[in-house]
Image (cartoon, one colour):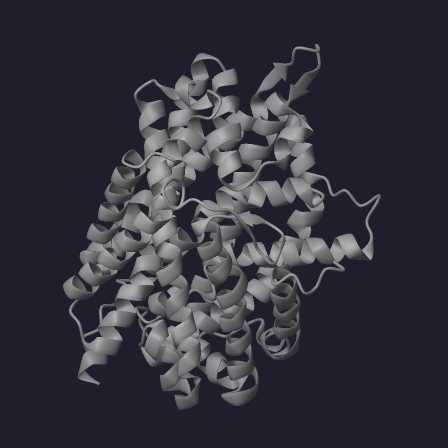
Length: 468
């Protein structure tokens, strides 16, 4: 009990919302959301994503934040406090960020490299053939950039909830939002005429983003869009990673959870939407519809630098601002990932924050080094169950995102929906006197719809469900 009383808390709901939104606004929103929106019918994907965010996403987000505040524990120990025999869920929930952080910091190092390149006026070098693959296959520089990125994250987490995470989020999130809005506005206003004399405008690209393509819609395609949107919500809302449980444990009992959760949903959806407006029109203008087929590192580090350099003198500035924005987004997410692990180590083993941060930094550094070596000395290529080719980074990503996260989410739904009952979460949410407006929806989602959708997503990621 004494330990719970001494637990660090966010100073207020604003700090919590910005920190949680910072976790949600990461690389997944920037390099995965625009690709899925372009692939899955533009506005059709957006409509389904919004519906799922207000139902499926709301359910998982509410559950994890409420579990954190109710137990005042991190993910590793929170589940066993709810129900003794459910401690295995906490183990899986803690394994997810442990696996993700090393490769996330490696990618963060890549962002640092590109930000420095555009900042120093060398953005034109990044569009040369083989620049990205040549860089990540180097043995020294990616490792140095990994250390720089990881060091920044470690210092923020070491400083604690108030002086570190909350203070950082209050400064970085407004800047990040301004950059996203500014680049999105610029993206919509640009025009370009290609070598064949075809002129494309940012507004035409915006239509690709917003107008639903339903003329050839089939049930198979609709299911595909639903599962793509649901998979994206894991990245967007940082659920099934233990993050929201850790952050929820720092929320004061008197804070209005309903209001905070609504604000996190709005912030995350708005930034994901703006990421689509920021990237899709620009790629469409300079590379056409075929250019929008890229996602992940290919979009971020190959396609977009080419777009920036096609913009002329403005390209260097826009590229610098873009990678600054991506760096901020990557840092806020990485901080939340590390915090979930550090909080777990502190609660389980009674370590100080400094000890827990040092241990996790070392683990992430070792894991990140292995990921870096996976592109040179330890390079290999295998095919995953979902059919994608993979190296070490991709394998870690597959295990954490396609296997463990659905298991955590499904287990959480069963635990809350059928064992401890939804009323446990609802009572926690309403503890401060606020009313949970989507109460009936929450009960139906946590018991029936969310587990069913999660099982379908899990089967698809394992390559078992191939009919959709």
